Image 1 (cartoon, rainbow, N blue to C red):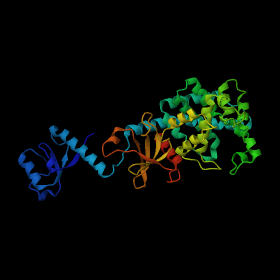
Image 2: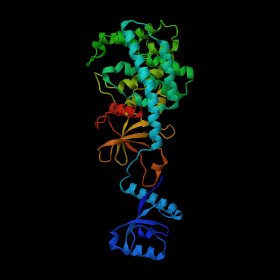
Image 3: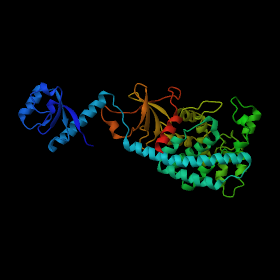
Image 4: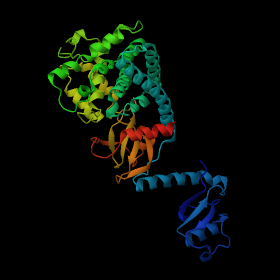
Length: 417
């Protein structure tokens, strides 16, 4: 980077530096010319006696002092950042990577969203489901998540309570693929898990809207109707020759629980395939962190904490622990406060330093909304400098600040396009 002009005290002046401005009018100084190179000790001494500081033009200075000027400039920047509690600036490389990954993920997301909308409509009116296209899209999503696991998970926060079922199918698929990748599933198993997850709620299209979207508590009879959706979805998809059995099992059994209290078959722990257990976990997680007509969604952190507490009788303990590790200490979508007071949203997890996520800052330390949001990677070495340490101090409840995650994602995806 080329520096044009820096302000330095007269005690840091050296021969060869080009003085472009003084700390006072030129006419009040003994110097005849407005701008000159310090060529003699006499001129250097005059400057020290006349001024407290001057401005040095780096490019006009002699090459032998430019390295020294670069050092002075760096030291000044560090002092200035410390004095102002550090004006956070976006990490250019992180920002470029983030927006490129987001752009690629959004293209696949939009294609898959279009597919699931069509599939749900086909199920509603009794048309055949194009499972071949589903397999192609799941493969694309799996490959994208393998390349850049954060971007797709960030898109799972594009939630809308009025379009819950289609978005929920998308989110369960993305989270299942991310989870499967994290635990090291083989490619074939990963795609089987993703396919079952994407199509797991097709049977809900047979549930009357007044039951599916009822804001109050369901009656026993209404709940029995809801409980039929895994069987209806399984029946619809079983007619397809290219639908793998294990994916069909995920559709049929994603509401089973380890204590046998789930439905439709009341299977117990050892009877439930690992992939079904994984799909069940992500299904519940997305459901409880989404706004519905009958409840407000929890924050990602609150959702994971509750699921951990609900493990006994519901989920495989080892898989729950792996899922929590997969999403991280600060799950993507969490609203966090930094130790210097800024508010941001977690948009990425660093797999080897999970206490240092990638943050999109939305409010400054005075809790004022930023006109230009700033993307910072807390794992960057520049946040480890003494006096500059930047870290997450706490996760905030979703209700503490009026931060619209969905609107932020939409703006960032438009920027990435």
